[in-house]
Amino acid sequence: MQKMIAVLEGDGIGPEIVKEGVKVLNAIENKFGHKFNLEYCPFGASAYFSDGSCFPEKTKSVCDEADAIIKGPVGLAVTEMNKIPQAERPEIAGILPLRERYDTFANYRPVYLDKSYAEISTLKEELVSEGIDIMMIRELVGGIYFGKKVEGESTGMEYSTDECTYKRKDVERIAHVAFREAQGRNKIITNVHKSNVLATSRFWNAIVEEIAKNYSDVQYNSILVDNVAFQLVKNPRQFNGVMLLENMQGDIITDQAGGLLGTLGLMPSACVGPDKGYVEPAHGSAPDIAGKNIANPYSMIGSVAFMLEKFFDLKEEASLIWDALKKVLKDGYRSSDIADKNTPKEKILSTADFGNKIAEYIK
Ligand code: NAI
Ligand code: MG
Image (cartoon, rainbow, N blue to C red; front, side, top):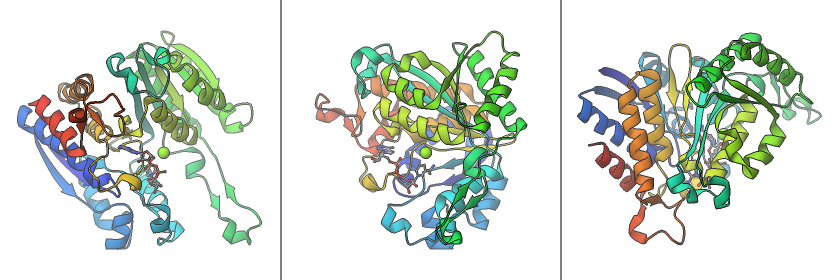
């Protein structure tokens, strides 16, 4: 197979972890005889400083041509970010336009911990000893993040607005994605919402429940988002299966999921649109650890596996990567974010060595 991939390294730990993702991609190329042509393009805060825009025109045209996009996290520490005008910052002028451009409405965020290494979790052993296997599916191009905004500065600091809208078609398509995903898993879906307060949540639920009727083989549960925040750390196992979340609630709850795993470094993701999409770790650019070769590249390497699976239909290649990720952890290796006092020093891997191990297992 021959494919063209746009690579957006991003900021902070972005370049370090993207490098490991590409290392693993090269290992797959060599093993299976594929040819992936990579085109590196500026994106994020670094692109703002080098090219005057977080999502430069030349990057847009490479992404338009590409078969898929690998994206590292973007953003800088607050003091650095303040050097960029609000409207030009990476989220507003980079990530949201990227999502909108390719209509990447379906965000897959697996929350996975094998029982053989469940001790990585921050939770008590008895809560996670059977492992965790949740696929969080977040709607990614609707809701409050994409609604009309009124900045406080424009009203003399008298008021500010973020509008939240969901259209029928937005809810229908993400619900179908989630139910189909549930059919391929344990056939349990949990719909997350805030219907006791939000009109958009009541609308969302009504449509999701209509769609549920087409999937009688899937057990449908529904729960308020604040209770999810509580239950996720009290008894995460009850959510094994698929969780369906709207955009902002999904943003927050998936980060909490990283917390219960023990690190955001174990959170890969795929952002899928009708024609194409991109993959990125679910976390940010971690400026606090950038440039130290200690970031956990699992999230980026898993995202590369997602790219092969979701965009190129290379299932065998993808599962080889997922298996290698599990094997490295089963074998007791840890990146520094998940190492603890019991981890022998020689088992603690740098970012680059973690990538080397995965590539070695793939060979
Ligand atoms: P963050 O997700 O970058 O970091 C939160 C914590 O998790 C930090 O302690 C960090 O060191 C740790 N962490 C994250 N990824 C890790 C990894 N792979 N290995 C080990 N530790 C890891 O969140 P934060 O600090 O709030 O945001 C930093 C920047 O990232 C901000 O500018 C923010 O706007 C941006 N951001 C970008 C996203 C994207 O590109 N999609 C998503 C979320 C935030
Ligand atoms: Mg987030």
